[in-house]
Image (cartoon, rainbow, N blue to C red):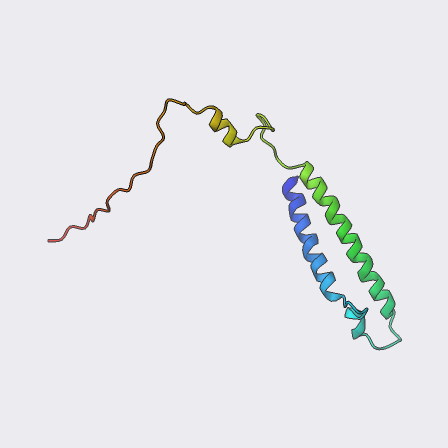
Length: 112
């Protein structure tokens, strides 16, 4: 469920970016390309539609974000304990730390 909501959120983000880029900050944008008055949707209706679509997608994105955070897969053993904390608590205090050593590079090619 989490992955489905994440993919849906990414799709909504892309749509939101496209709708915002179509708008013009001075009220033109997509509506400025339509100069004739005999069209079905006027300039104002296009601007209203883009503004409503922006607010709707933003609200849906916020709701999806909250829902996705509630459905994040958790560790089944103990959701309040991380794997690093588990390793630290199970560490043997008498064991010496392992330090990586640089090994010399050997050339395995046989030359006659």
